[in-house]
Image (tube, rainbow, N blue to C red):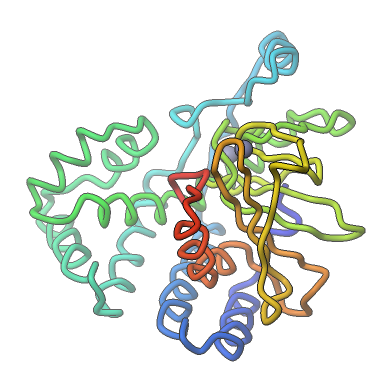
Length: 291
Ligand SMILES: [Zn+2]
Ligand SMILES: [Zn+2]
C-alpha cells in the first residue's frame, strides 16, 4: 500500500538531516542513500508501467491457495525509464567516490559506447539469473554485487509502482496474514508498528506494505512467545529487532509511535546497520537476501 510510502524529495532530505543529527556516524551513508532515494522518487513521475492483467479465475485460485499475485519475473517495468535512472544512479555512485565508484564509471562508459544494454540487466534481475550477472560482471571486470545493486536500485521505482497497481486486485476485507509479500511472494525486509500498535511488514523486494499479526515470525509462522524474542537499546527506543529461535532469523522493526521523525522505511533500513551486525553476532540470520 502506497499511502505511507508517498513522500516528496524534500521530505526525504528532511528525514536524512534528522537521522544524521541522531546518528552522526552514519553521515556519509545517509547522504549517499538520500541522493539515491531522491533520484528514485523523482523518476516515478516519468515512468509508465503497464497494468498487469490477472483474470478473475486466476485471482480466486490465488486467494484460495494463498499464492502471491505474481512472481518476480512477472513485474511490469518501464525499462527505458529505469535505464535513465540507472545512469543517474551511476553518476551519484561515481561522485560519492566509494567502493562502487569504479563499477559505476565502467557501466557508464559501456553505455556510452553502446556495449551495454540496461534492459538485459533488468531482465537478469527479475529472472534471478545469477549466471547472467556473473558473466556480465566478468566481461566488464566489475564486482557482481555492485552490478546487482545498481540494477536493483534502478528498477525499484518500477517495482513499487507495479506493486501499487497490483494491490488494487487485493481483497480489502480479507487481511493477507502471511509472512511473505501478497504481491510478489518475497520475504519482508522490515517491520513497523504504527497507529494503535498495528504491525505492518514491508516486502524486501517490491516494498509493498501489508498488515501482519503482532506476534508471529514472518519467516516460519512461529507464534510461540517462548521462542519469539526481541532486543532494543534504551538510546533508540524507536527500533527493535525481532528474533525467532525456531528458524534463527531476525527482522528489524521500527516503532513509528516512538519518534516524531518523518519515517522513510528505506532510509531507516540503512541507518540501522548496527542492528544487523548485532543480530548476526547473536547468530541470527536476516530473513531477506535483498535488504
Ligand atoms: Zn513484494
Ligand atoms: Zn521463525
